Length: 272
Image 1 (cartoon, rainbow, N blue to C red):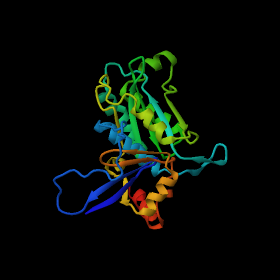
Image 2 (image 1 turned 90 degrees about the horizontal axis):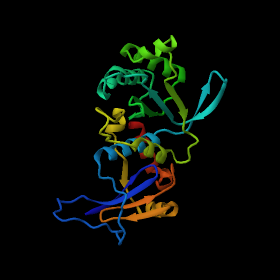
Image 3 (image 1 turned 45 degrees about the horizontal axis):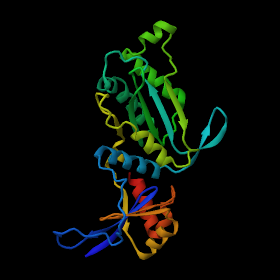
Image 4 (image 1 turned 135 degrees about the vertical axis):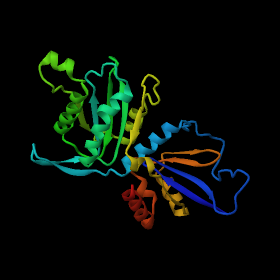
């Protein structure tokens, strides 16, 4: 017996048939399938895992209001995009930099409450590394910079800067909110996927918090009512041999769920 299942992502709903009886030896065709094919299918395992981490991070990061003690007011917040730059890594490769600096900064971030994050390494034109981190934890820019520079100094990466400027406090970090970006998921996916697997980087190119790495997309049995709701808001319907992908507006996933499914979806997100 086949049961229609829908996998609910931030900007997509993927519908497929799940076999619940004895093991089948033949392939089941997609009941929606037509002549079109899904040309955007990702085949690289690393890219798929990164896509999943981005989707789950966006899904479990609602817009909130945080208090700014400097401005003495509240302002909306959803995700921060942090850039950490290495001043001078010398002959150290990416593995060395990660061990000496990045791993320590991530441990500090986790102690500060940064439980959900994705990071990616990139080479600058001058061949030194910098890191991009997306997180739903608000961290003050001064704490980020001071901590990053402390670990850089211990690793010996600030010697040339100090010799030139007479201090160990370079402006080596940048922090900005991406709440004004219209499609946050697409923005993060495009930015984080740029250069994934770059062979010029000797070491890990990207990673994410363990909860995002271990979690799965929310899936549930699809009813005729669900299909009606999906098609009422879908911007595009893409059919393949094995599934159908419905493109929906960002953050509209709850609109395709019934009351009980929404409760299950909220429980799923809290469990990540």
